[in-house]
Length: 262
Image 1: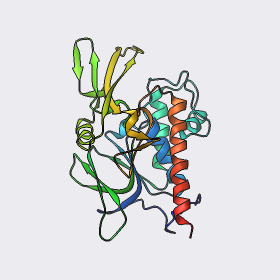
Image 2: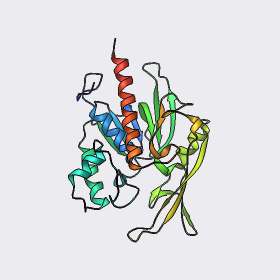
Image 3: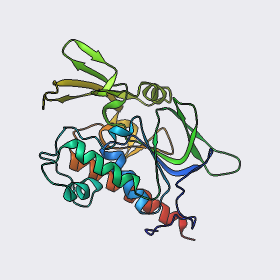
Image 4: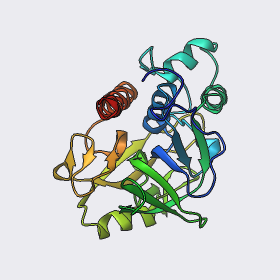
C-alpha cells in the first residue's frame, strides 16, 4: 500500500480528464493541506490539491522561518533543512512549491471551491462533487477542508475591512455559506498578525465548524468530508497542524488498507 502505485494497481494520474474521480481532494494548500496531500501522494493516493492562488502554496503565518517548529519528517521540515537558514519565507515557498510539483500523484490546481455535494452514482461508489467558481465540477471519494482562516474571513487593518483571510488572499465566502446550508454550525474565531518587515499588523475574523460538528477530523453531518488544521477550532502551531495532517493521512491509509483486504 505504501509503494508508488494506488490500490487499483495503476500509477496516480497526472493528467486527469473531466469526470475523473480522485481518491482525496484537499481544499486549501497552506500548511495542513500541503502536508496532507504530500503524505497521501507519496503513499500512492491520487490527490487533488486546490489553491485559490498557486503563489500562496504553503504560505506560512509569518514572512520568515524564525522559530518555525516543523517536524523533521514533514515536507516543510525536509525543505527547510535543504535551504540556508537565512533565506526568507519567499525562498522557502519556491523550494516547497517545486517539491510539491515534483511529487507524483498530486494534481495541483488553481481554483476557487464554492460548494460540496455528496452523491451516490448508480455506476460507482459514493463521491463528493466539488463545484468551483470557474465552472468545472470535480469529483473525489473524500474531501478535506484545509482552508485555514479563510471561511468567510474578514481582515481588519485599522478602520479598513477586507474580505480576506490574509493580506491579498481572498476569503471563501461561498464555501462557508454552502456549509451553513448543509446544517453545519459555524462559530467565529479570530487571529492577529503582528507587524513585521514593513507589513502592518492586522486582525482576521473567520469561521470554523463548531467542536460539536466534528468527530475527530470528520464532519458529522457529511459522510465523506473532513476538516484539518486552522479550519478546526482551537489553538494551532506549525507543529500541531503538521502533526494533525500526518495523523489524518495515517487514518486514511489505514482505512484504505482495510478496504483492500479480502
